Image (cartoon, rainbow, N blue to C red):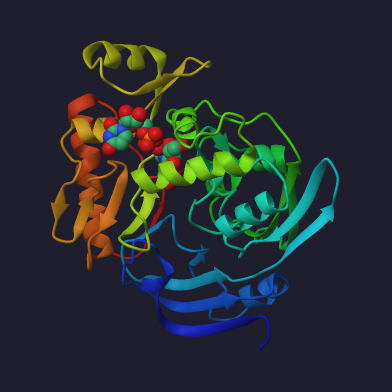
Length: 342
Ligand code: EPU
């Protein structure tokens, strides 16, 4: 059968960066997105639960998946239009960081703050990946997806994607769209985003006083490598909790009670609070229960020290959520998709 491979009772340990040793009843490795409709019509697939996977870097499997895991292994980068702004169509299965490095090598700007984020290009718009003062949404022209409800290819422009902080239409209408490609609009030059804490200092340390996009990328690599545990060394899914957004009055009251709280007042009557600060202040940084833990390098990161099950990791995460709520009255939400059996 061309275009995809089916594997029964497939191990997923190498397909999620938290390294949870769960299995899928059926795994479909898709190399040709045009074959998705055929695959979805397959008797064993139709009607069963579905989980679409890129690199599994934003996923906690709490148990075996009793359905079909669709792994998007498609490849391809196509420059559709050159010029001051390039239009580049990229297959969902391409590795995000490889693509970012390629754009910088071609002299395109925009994605430099988003270097070294694990995961695939197709996953990037789903949770609107962001780091160091930039979000992917700004550079997405459109997203191509298979619309499982309407049974047709859909092309959603940026507005239709309804991007927000670590959120999009693809997340809110979970299960409806299978992202097959992303079209980016990347400028040759743009105003660099240097405002995020630590970035200017890192550039100064590097001795760079007139930064180009690749300098910014290098600075971000230094900062991320210093702060975040490497999933190749210890299982993790990056930030496990979103930074909570609360009404300004609640943010102000918390800041009065906890002057050290890291928080960012927004223009819209809301504050974004540092979940890492809240978790650390509640005493959970570096905590370990069996092989499940909270990183001692960054309090937002749930880590698997070896053989933690998905259930053990989820139990620890829930303990953190309950502890932070008891201490500060703020309910944290997981950033990754949490899915699986009991
Ligand atoms: N902090 C602590 N304890 C810690 C770590 C941080 O108190 O252990 C406090 C510090 O005061 C720091 C503040 O939290 O100033 C913010 O920390 P950091 O700059 O590391 O950023 P973050 O808000 O914790 C977010 C993203 C990251 C992204 C960084 C940099 C979310 C959920 N996380 O983390 O994204 O790399 O900003 O832009 O928005 C991811 O989503 O997987 C991810 C890693």
